[in-house]
Image (tube, rainbow, N blue to C red; front, side, top):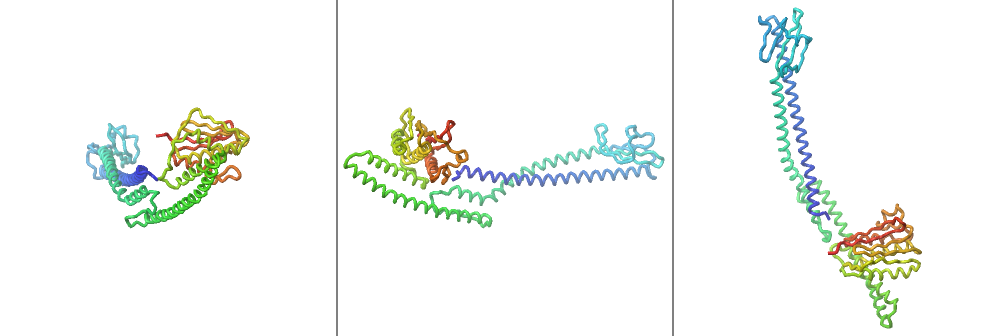
Length: 415
């Protein structure tokens, strides 16, 4: 189940994406609008300036022109005849923009006069450029204001819009897999979310039914398996009263291990329940578990590498199921070879000198139903790894560099 922190993190990510999208959209619209206003203002001013200069020059060179042809105003400067500055004489009739002179900007209009000369009209547009710069900075400041305002508005809208989804995610995060019959409740009339809620509730109902069937099967299987095991144990005890025999001891050990394994397997169907832990002497326990397999495969040389005694608080059935699965695979892989069992404080490992596992099959060995040999059920390693995960252990199976396979179970740190 996802933790509350994970749920909040995913929820905040969705909020953040929505806020970023709304703020980005607001800034884009504001930028386009501001750019349009600025471009329109520049175009209108340019058109107005040119129209003004055209009218003024037409007046100055027309029939009603003033007596003094050369005049210089603060913004408009008119030149004609011999008093035209040398810097302007190279310009042909036409309209020129953004000429620089003494850190000022001018537009220039040149027209041919009736006497074959040219008339020049300069218009100082520096104040217009200053106004355009001021308009640009005003627009940028306004854009910043729009960004800040849209951020807070987007936060509010995101919270309002995603509130039903947040409540739904909160319900999902609080679901307990051990409580059957829980369903999601949608507290608003939302057609899109209702489809999701109905689908999840329908799926949860199907899961509840499946879990109940599995639990019923597990309980029935436990009862049916315990009954013959109890009969076998009673018969073995009765025979043992007639005289202690090694075969009866093996039967008693097998019955005890079978009970422990049933408890461990049943624990997989109960998430909250943990089988009773016992303090185990691994050297003694593993030797007892290995004896039947060693007796069945006399051609296998089993070597034990246990530098120091190791005690472990664990469920005997889980250790038995995992160890016997690894050992059984090892002796089958090397029926005439050698198997080494190594026990350390933090793990035990079983190594064989068989042919190893095909590279294509190695990634799938823990899949339920997959077997790399004929006749295998493909459930042994799957059950072993599931049990290991149940107790916080780590199970690995890998090919050895020198040939063969190494299977190892690493224990969780002891508290």
